[in-house]
Length: 165
Image (spheres, rainbow, N blue to C red):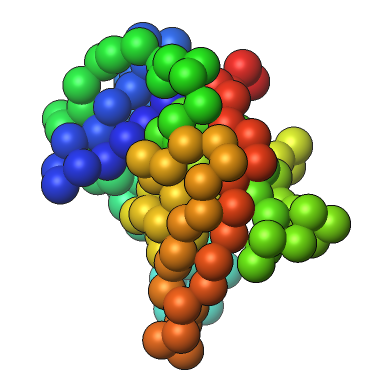
C-alpha cells in the first residue's frame, strides 16, 4: 500500500513489482506498438485530416505521461510492509467512518494512492482532506477535516483494517 510523505511513497513489494512491470511494458512493447501505429497512419497521406494519426499521437502523449508518473513514483518509492492491524488509521487500510457521530451515516473506503483505486472499493488519498484528517487516529476516536467551503467536519473512526485486496 502507499503512504506519501513529502516525496516518499511507501509500497509493498507486490505493489512495487506491479508498477515496475507496467513501466517496463510502457517503455518497451507499448512504445513499439504506438510507433508502428503512427508510422502506418503517416503512410496514409495528408496528416492535417488524418484522424488515425491524430488519435495515435494523442494515445502516445497519454502513454508518455503515464511513463513519467510511474518513473517519478518508483524513483521515490520505499518498499515496506503493509500497515499493522492495530486499529490506527494509516495508508493501506480499509477505514469505516461515521459522519458527525451518526452510526447510520457511514462510509467505508481504502486509504491509499490512486494506484490502488478499483471499482470494488472507494479510494481516498492520504493527502485528501478526509484522508489527512483520519490518518493517525485510532478506532473509536473522532477526527476533523476541512470541507471545500472552509468549514470543519467531524467523523468517528469505526473500523480500520489492513487492505487485503
